[in-house]
Image (cartoon, rainbow, N blue to C red; front, side, top):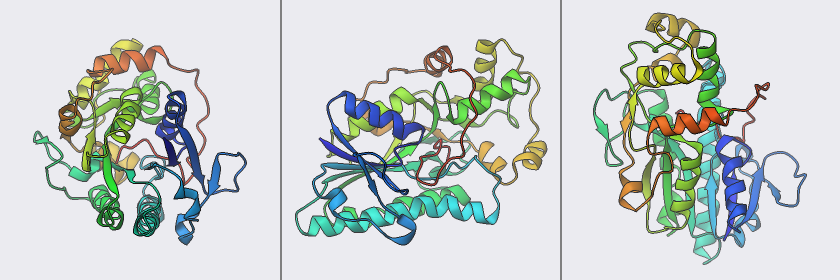
Length: 320
């Protein structure tokens, strides 16, 4: 199929583009800068600028746009960027897809990013796709983000939203930060460490997106997380074991709030999300346990590199 990908230069997007092309799909990448490659088309969500012709002959769209929620301290301006980089891109795509659908043109399948942050801090409650939204800044962002797809869905486009958890990859994303802390001897539990962290390997994240692209009958929210969430302290311990570093000293909640500001509350939040829709539709995880995912990610670890600042059209690490 011909798939248009927005946010194609982020952690998930770049891996997705490679996987789509590897299976023979044509990919068009939406970028905010001036195009430099034949497969790129320019758009500007902040200005509401998207030529419908960029989507006209495509079969599907995947939108992964959104600045990383943990890339900067949460000032008022950065919080607004977290929201706008997600909601504006989604709103523009929804409007454009709806207009094309009214003319029986354009993609009939749309996958739009969201995050498990939708559920807020829910303790030990098991969270499926039917669970309601939580409270807090990121929960509000996710609710608005998902709601922005409605115009396209109402016009008959098959829309699914990807409530992604913490994506584990050999380089980049949340694991890169956790690895650095662990090597410095600071990889202990965050707060109590009892909070549930729903994780998924990058391989399974991309595999789930391909699975959903091929199943337009699946609509609405989909928890894109591994099948076996564990408490954060267990994740810290497993990383420490593999890196041969101690993980005994916790980071107290007050200290985390001092360092990370408001974002610390979300690092301490608990989301015991399970992938009910994926499992029910026959998806098979390559890394069915956190141990499998960490073994894969840490064995393929790349040499340390300076991390570039995340541009606004990248997908973040999906920790929202």
